[in-house]
Image 1 (cartoon, rainbow, N blue to C red):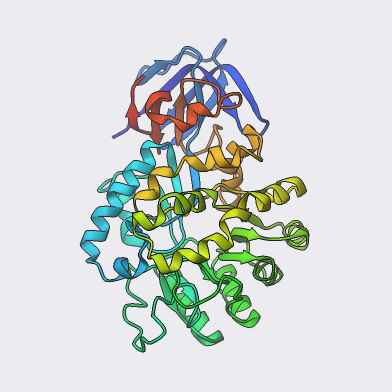
Image 2: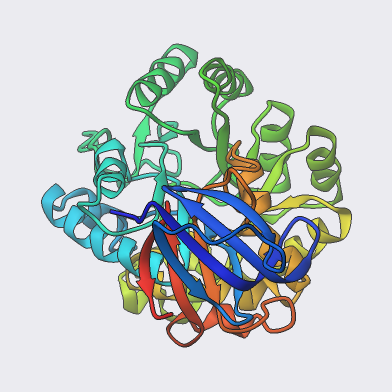
Length: 413
């Protein structure tokens, strides 16, 4: 249980919207929300029925968001994952989730695998982890990125298993039914596989997947439910088709060109580069369990991700932080900051994991900011992330406290 009031006094508040550090602030938290943020000097008397922490100038910033995770993917071998016990996968997911929270991530958006049960277990405190925004299954055409069958395999074994990452559907009626079923189960967004991928055994990276009618059907179903679509895409062709059909969140995007940047800006869509996973897969993917025969496709996209990020950043595309890590490579979740910092300024990188992510999630003002009325998802940092991103890259050393929904998950104050 949280105290009735928690006060962080004499804090330096990171205003991610304006990109500045506000000194000597008082933050008053009541329940799961921030009640007030005000100058400490001249503030109202401290509430008697709560706890007060004098931070002595330490930085308070919003909890981090990772907009592309697979919290049930304890291995990069999708077939092994699909054939494993749901109980075992849930246990492994619990470990992955707790580690994410201890790195400072208080909200994560799952791109296939997590479901309402896992999200509810976190919400109710049975599993320690960040809040999960989930899609359930990622939707794939036959032979698409979520079709795990080998060329000679005929039976669709486990394609709609609740712990596999994807579900196969073909044609507009099947697409609508699949979207409606995920929405019925509480999905926060709809995930579409719209190009070939690395871990899928039979498609090619250059493949465009689903017809435009199918994509538009998914976008319509999501919008009718107040949701949006995110899409796995690599090539400019796949990205541009998705943008023209109304997809809001485009993942990876390693092979985009200037025409893609124009369409991002025209449609106000978001790009979620996932540099961390390509870096990790190149260094340790096969050793971590990625089937050797699938690693060949990795090099078609791995070297192009930073160039795509630079193009999008230069043109002013809305960028959101994502990692897409699998198996033991989840430990590299913060490495994406180091990689993206080669292109993005510290404040823009922080925004991509806070207020811009919240905008993508349709939670602007509620998540990703230190402001009155927002969720009390907060980090207390010993350092200034605007001048030294290293204080985010070593949470064990620099994170004095992690708070989610007004409850301390780590308290070393």
